[in-house]
Structures are given as C-alpha cells and as structure tokens.
Image 1 (cartoon, helix red, strand yellow):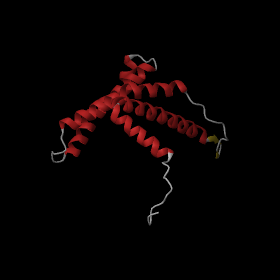
Image 2 (cartoon, one colour):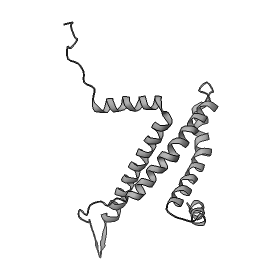
Image 3 (tube, one colour):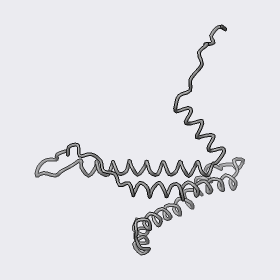
Image 4 (cartoon, one colour):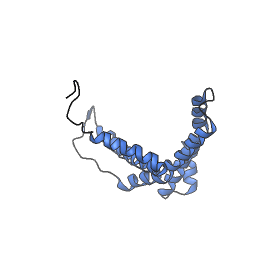
Length: 157
C-alpha cells in the first residue's frame, strides 16, 4: 500500500448518485429534465403552501380574552390542486422558462459588460410580468373560472 492511500473504495452517497443522474439528464434531454424538475418543484411548493395555510388557519381559535392553539388535527391535502400545479410546471413553466433563458443567453452574451444585470432587468421587466399573468390565466381556467373573473384577478392582484 502507498502511504496515505486507502485500499477501501469510496461508495458514493445516494444524494451524489441522484445528482449525477440529474446532471446527465440535463445534458441528454434538457427540456424534459427541466419540465420534470418544474413539475416536482411546483407540486412540492403547493404541498408546502397547503400545509402552511392549514397550520395558519388552525393556529388560533379566538375565545374571549385568550388565544388557544388547536390540537393535532392532521393535514388534508387537495390532490387535484397539487396535480394542477404539477401539470402547469411540466407543460408550461419548465418548457417556457427553458426557452426564455436560452434566448437570454443567446441574446446577451457573457462578453457584454454588465450582461448579468441586463439579463436580470429583461427577466424582471419583460418575462416575469408576462409569465405571472400566464400563471393566473392558466390556473384560473383550470379552476373553471371565466375570462372576466380571471381578468378581474389580474387587474386586482
């Protein structure tokens, strides 16, 4: 044996195997990988939002002169809502963001001075408002809202 070299083989962790697999999928099929990632993150975000909403609603019961915490009532998840978020992520958010950021990278090369700031401004001033409106329109339609109601939401919020 050489000094300082172990004869044991290093076994990669599950997380590192998962990360390498994800990075390979980004190289091989970037659009599909980003769509799947967006679906997973969108669904996970909605699960967390539902948990927080319920915990905030249950945190306080008003009784004259005091506040009482509610006891363990469990969490009830709206799986249809989670599915809508996952589908939005997979069908729209992942592919649209993939295309937008590719366009930004091609349009504003790194050699341009201040390219990060230019990309940030384009993203926040052009893309973010349009994408936010798209989100409200699609999710409103998925909830069965009519266009007038969706339009009111866009104007109000």
